[in-house]
Length: 159
Length: 159
Length: 159
Image 1 (cartoon, rainbow over the protein chains, first blue to last red):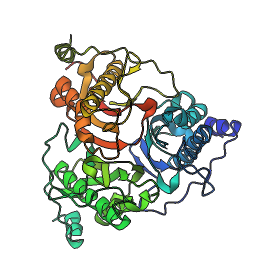
Image 2 (image 1 turned 60 degrees about the horizontal axis):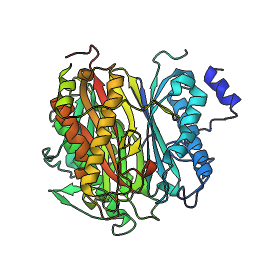
Image 3 (image 1 turned 30 degrees about the vertical axis):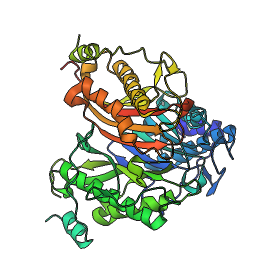
Image 4 (image 1 turned 30 degrees about the horizontal axis):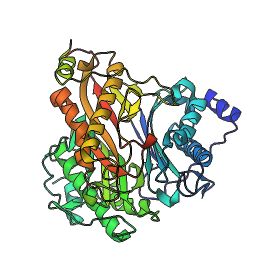
């Protein structure tokens, strides 16, 4: 068991089997050392855990949890991209966060911390990332949050 | 005629001459093997083919066609970036899709498939890409869709 | 004094000390030759210079100035990433611009030129970049503009 799997276990996080690609795109693309992971929604066993805009139908704590679930789903995709070994992750380069927001909701960074904090908890220093968080009017399937990622891998696996 | 040009012809797609850069930025930037293509709008011969938000003024099929036109315009820029030879495209790494959306429109992925499907039709396996699709309140020139791309090229051209 | 510092001085631009990272993410990440800079807001000495949506509470010229201030803050982060020597910047690869917009405001490109033009003024040919500019309903802290960047550095510094 890698140190990352251990930390996931300590945090009580079980990575789901990522959805197989059914739509017209791939869940991730590996190019050289980099993985581009497609935007992930807060789906758990195929169900959205919250719907609507943060600051309206969705409370801020619910939004934070939704962002954390997006992070879990990103990690699940990433694990496949790593051939099962998340210890190959060398750097979480960038997270892009889109928060469906009510017109007077300005705390997108607080919501997005749900994803950022989880990456830091799981990956430690390696999990430090650049980030852009913006509010949008509406997201696919009425999701409150969508997060994508660019990640750098070690070529030679285990650290 | 490259295999890609042949497929474009079979699909009845004629790539336009891409607009020369008039604004304060470049239509694309090549860095190493990668091309970053600026956000493209559904312009045909300089005219927007539809205006407004999908789910409001713009129907979903019209949105899908607009996304496909963004893809055509991305390919036109890409062709210039490739020195005229689209067979140099090694991987469509990522598409970023922004759909101007009515507040109750949640089918951004369906709209964005207009762009994704066209890349798959033209480039086959090479056209498989990661993707992020989000809804936004408004786009430049009242466009219904804007799509940008990151693409990897072969260094040595023809495959 | 590098040529870039000279140009900043000629333009009367003093780069601020960039904010130290207080939140759950880094202001930038360096990977190989590339720097990914987190989304920057139009903050001056810790204060937002304008609040609200362009086309509503915020006028277009105010929006342009806000975008330019985002660019200044990007450069301040970039200077740290360069070890103090902005002449190491080899290419401004991509700017991502998010403009908080009223529902009938379609001139996001004009606003975003505030950032693009400043990069061109300071970096010349090296400052040419790809770009995506979209309108969003709301931004963190009620900012009118947020801009992020991907930048390529020279490995060996001084040009």
